[in-house]
Image (cartoon, rainbow, N blue to C red):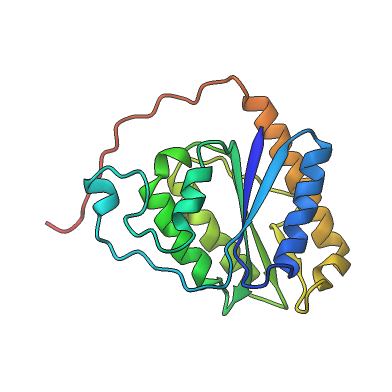
Length: 204
């Protein structure tokens, strides 16, 4: 079993990384492998709604000049996902949203139905809004959301400060144990059959 974790912070070793490390260490103790990918701090594309990934059945984004398709290539081997981000203006980092939306749209078949969780880091406020935003794609893709003892949030501004948030670190460990438990519980059990999608457009 393997969990793919995405560090959406422009700071490679900031508080988001510290929270994800707490999760990774606990997953390892529970016998679950993990891999963390740093999004980086180079420019990334937002979705242009070109639909080439769907129309040409690419299984990946049509644009291949940033990290998005590197992440797509890692999806099939992942049994679960954790995405983490700092909170900017009550929202996740824009680069994470830009990349993750393209990943989920172009390669949704490799995300659907897999246990998933989001983690938000903040200095003071806005984390619950950022957390909910990151959960939205998982909810649309039939992913069981992995919860914890509280919202998956930790507090800190300067790099390393989140480690001092005792409850936040405990929340990360509880999240990891819940993820491991769920992965083990569903291993070998097929997902329920899905009805064909019935889109309903309200503009006639």
